[in-house]
Length: 112
Length: 113
Image 1: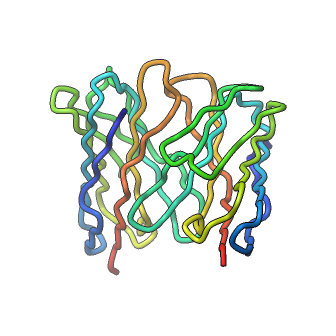
Image 2 (image 1 turned 90 degrees about the vertical axis):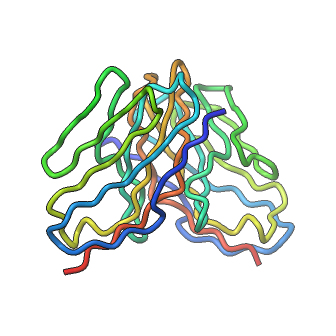
């Protein structure tokens, strides 16, 4: 089955700096890669996703890049703000498989 | 507005008791999923269903069961609760598309004493 590795497990940045979280996946058939944000005590919520026919996608301060050859994808957050502090999860799924396999998460702390 | 709800939100039970966690969605999604979340392990899939009468085991299904008698509900049953099942449980649902967004419920915090 699919295996998703996520790094780093914790990341601390100063407000205004950029943050990058990286994930690798094992199943070459995977073609959908969402990112979820989970604030303390809340449910995970989708913030951005990318499909395998696209190399990069941006939404305001958030961007995701995908390298299918290397089987890795990354989340980039620019101009970080304290409200970006949360746990971020990457995930992967593929083909007719609706299941998501999640990475173990990255705790992002943005210091004012 | 469509939503996904879970009940109870908090539960304390004793080892050996049977516990059922409810999940109800009004999205009319065929796909429903149960995850458990533990520190250091992220979100791990317990069971999932792609429609009425369909159920499948995930990566951590031992000690858990589900049944799907209608589109809206996927209850999760712990047959004989164990302390190792103390966790936060999330239900999710999605459309019938490989890239369908999974929408999560608010979670149930379960403590097994």
